[in-house]
Image (cartoon, rainbow, N blue to C red; front, side):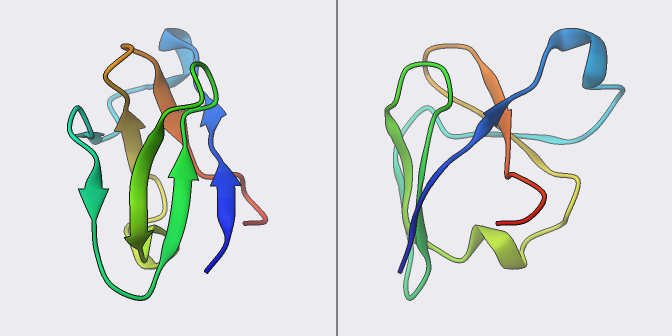
Length: 72
């Protein structure tokens, strides 16, 4: 399990990509912890999000849109 700070994506770079709303913390099994790159809130706990669709974006409850860093 790894703690990863996600990278904030500006609205101009969303370009129709799918956004997963993480307004409520997501809890999974055998994965990593992901934190919002804007406010620092833990968005996902033990979620294998690095195995998810590669161009998926994640919306935090603070309103910012984040993506996993390319080399995470």
